[in-house]
Amino acid sequence: MSNITIHDFLKKKKEGKKITMLTAYDYPFARIVDEAGIDAVLVGDSLGMVVQGLENTLPVTMDEMIYHTKMVTRAVKNAMVIGDMPFMSYQASIEEALKNAGRFLKEGGASAVKMEGGAEIAGHIRAMTKSDIPVMAHIGLTPQSIHRMGGYKVQGKTEEAAMKLIEEAHIVEDAGAFSLLLEAIPMGLGKIISEELSIPAIGIGAGPHCDGQILVLHDVIGLFERFVPKFVKQYANVKEDALKAIKTFKEEIERGAFPSDEQSFR
Image (cartoon, rainbow, N blue to C red; front, side, top):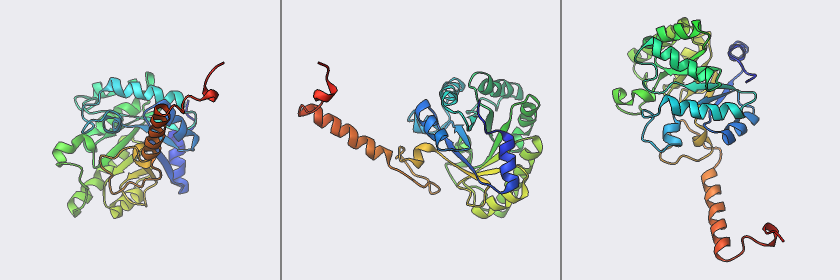
């Protein structure tokens, strides 16, 4: 059971302390993220792209999300684990959304769920919070809506669009969301929303004024190369290190240097 709770999120917001989040999808990386002291781990449907090699997140299923969440919760001792509701796991009805959200807690061992959307998911948030399922809402660029949005584009750039996002932020807060993820919006808008809400606003491409930040782990450590969003900062190049190690392994086998006496039994 994680030690970080939704109350810690709210406390950090009140005290002006930044919240740290990363994604993770398996046991080894979840252990590393947790040992680093990250506050919360999102088992994101981004696994469709960075783990499964898909073009977008839409094909990811509930069963796949539960599978990966189980691996993460086995590893995590301190961080809050949040399960990401995949496409069509909640859109059809509140009843289906409630059932699928419950699976993250009951089967996956998560402490909360994340859902994309604003006013249209207010009823879902209310039903989940009444059933003791904490919800993180997600507005701005919502990857499950790429066909409607016309791709991965910055949202809230016009005054009208910005006002709508501010309104949506207040709606999900009033519905009972314990936090809000803001993705790919102008940093000024991120500042306004963060200051107006009593719940934490977590940014991903929403500027430095949010109450916390999240990135995809594979972006942070240099394991995903297909594209690097503007808001990503790479802190390592694990892909290059791994490639070098594997090439050396291959070369040592070919010239007979591995295994040596040290790696052999007598």
